[in-house]
Length: 304
Picture: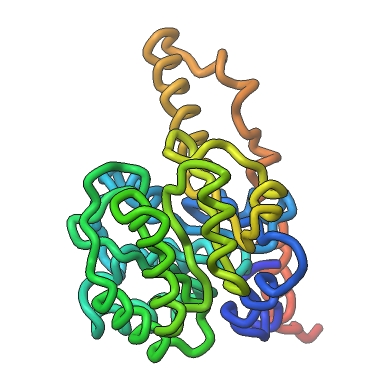
Protein backbone atom coordinates (compact mmCIF):
# COMPACT_ATOMS: atom_id res chain seq x y z
CA UNK A 1 0.00 0.00 0.00
CA UNK A 2 1.22 3.50 -0.83
CA UNK A 3 -0.61 6.69 0.07
CA UNK A 4 -0.23 7.85 -3.56
CA UNK A 5 -3.11 5.60 -4.68
CA UNK A 6 -6.31 7.21 -3.45
CA UNK A 7 -8.39 4.05 -3.87
CA UNK A 8 -6.16 2.31 -1.31
CA UNK A 9 -6.69 4.98 1.37
CA UNK A 10 -9.07 4.12 4.24
CA UNK A 11 -12.61 5.17 3.36
CA UNK A 12 -13.55 5.55 7.03
CA UNK A 13 -12.31 8.57 8.99
CA UNK A 14 -9.37 8.22 11.35
CA UNK A 15 -11.56 9.28 14.28
CA UNK A 16 -14.12 6.59 13.58
CA UNK A 17 -11.42 3.93 13.18
CA UNK A 18 -9.73 5.00 16.42
CA UNK A 19 -13.05 4.92 18.27
CA UNK A 20 -13.78 1.38 17.06
CA UNK A 21 -10.38 0.18 18.27
CA UNK A 22 -10.97 1.88 21.62
CA UNK A 23 -14.38 0.22 22.00
CA UNK A 24 -13.06 -3.24 21.08
CA UNK A 25 -12.25 -5.76 23.83
CA UNK A 26 -8.82 -5.48 25.43
CA UNK A 27 -6.48 -2.56 25.95
CA UNK A 28 -5.52 -0.44 22.93
CA UNK A 29 -1.72 -0.42 22.69
CA UNK A 30 -0.28 2.79 21.23
CA UNK A 31 3.49 2.83 20.78
CA UNK A 32 5.03 6.20 20.10
CA UNK A 33 6.13 6.85 16.52
CA UNK A 34 8.29 9.96 16.12
CA UNK A 35 8.41 9.89 12.32
CA UNK A 36 7.12 8.02 9.27
CA UNK A 37 9.83 5.34 9.37
CA UNK A 38 9.01 4.52 13.00
CA UNK A 39 5.32 4.38 12.08
CA UNK A 40 5.99 1.81 9.37
CA UNK A 41 8.12 -0.30 11.69
CA UNK A 42 5.39 -0.24 14.36
CA UNK A 43 2.80 -1.22 11.77
CA UNK A 44 4.97 -4.11 10.58
CA UNK A 45 5.21 -5.26 14.21
CA UNK A 46 1.42 -5.61 14.23
CA UNK A 47 0.19 -2.47 16.00
CA UNK A 48 -3.19 -1.09 14.85
CA UNK A 49 -2.84 2.49 16.08
CA UNK A 50 -0.04 4.87 17.09
CA UNK A 51 0.81 7.76 19.37
CA UNK A 52 2.63 11.00 18.53
CA UNK A 53 4.33 12.56 21.56
CA UNK A 54 5.07 16.25 21.91
CA UNK A 55 8.27 15.35 23.76
CA UNK A 56 9.36 13.10 20.90
CA UNK A 57 8.56 15.76 18.28
CA UNK A 58 10.47 18.50 20.06
CA UNK A 59 13.42 16.25 20.91
CA UNK A 60 13.70 15.15 17.29
CA UNK A 61 13.94 18.86 16.42
CA UNK A 62 16.65 19.42 19.04
CA UNK A 63 14.28 21.29 21.38
CA UNK A 64 13.01 20.69 24.94
CA UNK A 65 9.36 19.85 25.60
CA UNK A 66 8.30 23.28 26.88
CA UNK A 67 5.45 24.16 24.54
CA UNK A 68 7.76 25.71 21.95
CA UNK A 69 6.54 24.07 18.74
CA UNK A 70 3.63 25.30 16.65
CA UNK A 71 0.50 23.72 15.21
CA UNK A 72 1.99 23.81 11.70
CA UNK A 73 5.06 21.89 12.87
CA UNK A 74 2.91 19.23 14.50
CA UNK A 75 0.84 18.91 11.32
CA UNK A 76 4.03 17.99 9.44
CA UNK A 77 4.60 15.07 11.83
CA UNK A 78 0.95 13.98 11.70
CA UNK A 79 0.88 13.91 7.90
CA UNK A 80 4.06 11.87 7.50
CA UNK A 81 2.97 9.28 10.06
CA UNK A 82 -0.56 8.96 8.69
CA UNK A 83 0.57 8.87 5.05
CA UNK A 84 3.21 6.24 5.67
CA UNK A 85 1.21 3.90 7.90
CA UNK A 86 -2.50 4.74 7.32
CA UNK A 87 -3.01 3.91 11.02
CA UNK A 88 -5.25 5.97 13.32
CA UNK A 89 -3.08 8.29 15.38
CA UNK A 90 -3.46 9.79 18.87
CA UNK A 91 -1.68 13.16 18.93
CA UNK A 92 -0.31 15.12 21.88
CA UNK A 93 -2.09 18.50 21.80
CA UNK A 94 -0.20 19.92 24.79
CA UNK A 95 -2.22 22.80 26.31
CA UNK A 96 -4.07 23.57 23.07
CA UNK A 97 -1.72 26.33 21.84
CA UNK A 98 -3.72 29.06 23.56
CA UNK A 99 -7.24 29.55 24.78
CA UNK A 100 -10.59 28.28 23.50
CA UNK A 101 -10.43 29.57 19.91
CA UNK A 102 -6.83 28.36 19.63
CA UNK A 103 -7.94 24.93 20.87
CA UNK A 104 -10.65 24.83 18.20
CA UNK A 105 -8.11 25.79 15.54
CA UNK A 106 -5.79 23.01 16.75
CA UNK A 107 -8.58 20.42 16.60
CA UNK A 108 -9.53 21.41 13.06
CA UNK A 109 -5.90 21.44 11.92
CA UNK A 110 -5.04 18.07 13.47
CA UNK A 111 -8.18 16.38 12.20
CA UNK A 112 -7.69 17.72 8.67
CA UNK A 113 -4.08 16.47 8.79
CA UNK A 114 -5.33 12.94 9.50
CA UNK A 115 -5.27 12.54 13.29
CA UNK A 116 -7.79 10.16 14.83
CA UNK A 117 -7.54 11.42 18.41
CA UNK A 118 -5.78 14.04 20.51
CA UNK A 119 -5.19 14.72 24.15
CA UNK A 120 -5.36 18.09 25.82
CA UNK A 121 -3.74 18.79 29.20
CA UNK A 122 -4.61 21.08 32.12
CA UNK A 123 -1.18 22.67 32.53
CA UNK A 124 -0.31 26.32 31.98
CA UNK A 125 2.54 27.54 29.78
CA UNK A 126 5.43 27.11 30.01
CA UNK A 127 4.33 23.49 30.30
CA UNK A 128 6.55 20.61 31.41
CA UNK A 129 6.77 16.89 30.91
CA UNK A 130 4.10 15.36 33.10
CA UNK A 131 6.69 13.46 35.15
CA UNK A 132 8.62 16.57 36.21
CA UNK A 133 8.01 18.71 39.29
CA UNK A 134 6.44 22.15 39.85
CA UNK A 135 3.85 21.99 37.09
CA UNK A 136 1.41 24.90 37.00
CA UNK A 137 -2.22 23.95 36.47
CA UNK A 138 -5.08 25.78 34.83
CA UNK A 139 -8.27 26.13 36.81
CA UNK A 140 -10.87 23.40 36.41
CA UNK A 141 -13.24 25.82 34.67
CA UNK A 142 -10.56 26.99 32.21
CA UNK A 143 -9.72 23.44 31.25
CA UNK A 144 -13.38 22.45 30.99
CA UNK A 145 -13.93 25.31 28.55
CA UNK A 146 -11.06 24.04 26.43
CA UNK A 147 -12.49 20.52 26.41
CA UNK A 148 -15.91 21.88 25.44
CA UNK A 149 -14.31 23.93 22.64
CA UNK A 150 -12.44 20.88 21.35
CA UNK A 151 -15.66 18.85 21.36
CA UNK A 152 -17.45 21.55 19.40
CA UNK A 153 -14.65 21.85 16.84
CA UNK A 154 -14.20 18.15 16.06
CA UNK A 155 -16.06 16.14 13.46
CA UNK A 156 -15.41 12.70 14.96
CA UNK A 157 -11.93 13.10 16.47
CA UNK A 158 -11.63 11.35 19.84
CA UNK A 159 -10.95 13.89 22.62
CA UNK A 160 -8.83 12.73 25.57
CA UNK A 161 -8.51 15.12 28.54
CA UNK A 162 -5.27 14.81 30.49
CA UNK A 163 -4.96 15.92 34.09
CA UNK A 164 -1.61 16.54 35.77
CA UNK A 165 -3.25 17.25 39.12
CA UNK A 166 -2.28 14.08 41.01
CA UNK A 167 1.13 15.45 42.01
CA UNK A 168 -0.20 18.69 43.54
CA UNK A 169 -3.85 18.00 44.35
CA UNK A 170 -3.71 14.28 45.10
CA UNK A 171 -6.01 11.59 43.78
CA UNK A 172 -9.10 13.46 45.01
CA UNK A 173 -8.21 16.54 43.01
CA UNK A 174 -7.33 14.54 39.90
CA UNK A 175 -10.61 12.61 40.03
CA UNK A 176 -12.66 15.78 40.61
CA UNK A 177 -11.04 17.41 37.61
CA UNK A 178 -11.51 14.32 35.45
CA UNK A 179 -15.23 14.21 36.22
CA UNK A 180 -15.59 17.86 35.18
CA UNK A 181 -13.74 17.16 31.94
CA UNK A 182 -16.05 14.26 31.13
CA UNK A 183 -19.04 16.52 31.79
CA UNK A 184 -17.50 19.07 29.40
CA UNK A 185 -17.39 16.49 26.62
CA UNK A 186 -14.15 14.50 26.86
CA UNK A 187 -14.34 10.96 25.44
CA UNK A 188 -11.58 9.63 27.72
CA UNK A 189 -9.29 10.68 30.57
CA UNK A 190 -5.50 10.54 30.85
CA UNK A 191 -4.38 10.73 34.52
CA UNK A 192 -0.71 11.65 34.24
CA UNK A 193 2.18 10.60 36.50
CA UNK A 194 0.41 8.25 38.90
CA UNK A 195 3.07 6.63 41.01
CA UNK A 196 1.85 3.16 42.00
CA UNK A 197 -0.66 0.45 41.18
CA UNK A 198 -2.92 1.47 44.05
CA UNK A 199 -3.31 4.97 42.57
CA UNK A 200 -4.09 3.58 39.13
CA UNK A 201 -6.70 1.20 40.56
CA UNK A 202 -8.27 3.85 42.77
CA UNK A 203 -8.53 6.34 39.92
CA UNK A 204 -10.21 3.73 37.72
CA UNK A 205 -12.54 2.66 40.55
CA UNK A 206 -13.71 6.25 40.98
CA UNK A 207 -14.26 6.78 37.23
CA UNK A 208 -16.59 3.87 36.40
CA UNK A 209 -17.48 3.46 32.73
CA UNK A 210 -14.90 6.04 31.60
CA UNK A 211 -12.20 5.18 29.06
CA UNK A 212 -8.79 5.73 30.71
CA UNK A 213 -5.29 6.10 29.25
CA UNK A 214 -2.11 4.97 31.01
CA UNK A 215 1.32 6.41 30.21
CA UNK A 216 4.15 3.87 30.43
CA UNK A 217 7.06 6.21 29.86
CA UNK A 218 10.57 5.20 30.86
CA UNK A 219 12.56 7.10 33.50
CA UNK A 220 9.42 8.70 34.95
CA UNK A 221 7.36 8.50 38.14
CA UNK A 222 5.32 5.48 37.06
CA UNK A 223 6.81 2.02 37.77
CA UNK A 224 6.92 -0.46 34.90
CA UNK A 225 3.65 -2.29 34.26
CA UNK A 226 2.67 -4.36 31.25
CA UNK A 227 -0.27 -3.66 28.98
CA UNK A 228 -2.09 -6.63 30.53
CA UNK A 229 -1.50 -5.29 34.04
CA UNK A 230 -2.88 -1.87 33.09
CA UNK A 231 -5.91 -3.54 31.52
CA UNK A 232 -6.52 -5.43 34.74
CA UNK A 233 -6.32 -2.11 36.63
CA UNK A 234 -9.16 -0.75 34.48
CA UNK A 235 -7.40 1.09 31.64
CA UNK A 236 -8.48 1.12 28.00
CA UNK A 237 -5.35 2.59 26.37
CA UNK A 238 -1.61 2.54 26.99
CA UNK A 239 1.08 4.69 25.38
CA UNK A 240 4.84 4.28 25.25
CA UNK A 241 5.41 7.89 24.17
CA UNK A 242 9.14 8.42 23.66
CA UNK A 243 10.48 4.85 23.53
CA UNK A 244 11.16 4.79 19.79
CA UNK A 245 13.03 8.09 19.96
CA UNK A 246 15.06 7.03 23.00
CA UNK A 247 16.17 3.82 21.28
CA UNK A 248 16.99 5.60 18.02
CA UNK A 249 18.89 8.39 19.78
CA UNK A 250 20.97 5.95 21.83
CA UNK A 251 21.89 4.05 18.66
CA UNK A 252 22.85 7.29 16.90
CA UNK A 253 25.03 8.38 19.84
CA UNK A 254 26.82 5.02 19.73
CA UNK A 255 27.30 5.39 15.98
CA UNK A 256 28.89 8.83 16.21
CA UNK A 257 31.14 7.70 19.07
CA UNK A 258 32.26 4.73 16.96
CA UNK A 259 33.07 6.92 13.95
CA UNK A 260 34.99 9.37 16.16
CA UNK A 261 36.95 6.50 17.72
CA UNK A 262 37.55 4.28 14.69
CA UNK A 263 37.19 6.54 11.70
CA UNK A 264 34.85 3.83 10.37
CA UNK A 265 31.30 2.54 10.77
CA UNK A 266 32.27 -1.12 10.30
CA UNK A 267 31.91 -2.04 13.99
CA UNK A 268 28.32 -0.79 13.91
CA UNK A 269 27.18 -2.83 10.90
CA UNK A 270 25.51 -5.58 12.97
CA UNK A 271 23.33 -2.91 14.61
CA UNK A 272 22.36 -1.19 11.37
CA UNK A 273 19.22 -1.61 9.31
CA UNK A 274 20.39 -3.07 6.01
CA UNK A 275 19.53 -1.57 2.65
CA UNK A 276 17.20 -4.51 2.00
CA UNK A 277 15.45 -3.98 5.35
CA UNK A 278 15.10 -0.26 4.70
CA UNK A 279 13.61 -0.74 1.24
CA UNK A 280 11.23 -3.41 2.53
CA UNK A 281 10.04 -1.11 5.32
CA UNK A 282 9.55 1.80 2.91
CA UNK A 283 7.64 -0.37 0.40
CA UNK A 284 10.23 0.79 -2.11
CA UNK A 285 9.36 -1.81 -4.71
CA UNK A 286 5.65 -0.99 -4.48
CA UNK A 287 6.45 2.58 -5.44
CA UNK A 288 8.70 1.34 -8.27
CA UNK A 289 5.97 -0.97 -9.55
CA UNK A 290 3.46 1.87 -9.39
CA UNK A 291 5.74 4.11 -11.42
CA UNK A 292 6.31 1.40 -14.04
CA UNK A 293 2.60 0.65 -14.35
CA UNK A 294 1.78 4.31 -14.96
CA UNK A 295 4.52 4.67 -17.54
CA UNK A 296 3.35 1.54 -19.33
CA UNK A 297 -0.24 2.78 -19.52
CA UNK A 298 0.66 6.10 -21.16
CA UNK A 299 3.22 4.92 -23.72
CA UNK A 300 1.84 5.61 -27.21
CA UNK A 301 1.46 2.80 -29.69
CA UNK A 302 3.65 3.54 -32.71
CA UNK A 303 2.20 2.43 -36.03
CA UNK A 304 4.41 0.19 -38.14
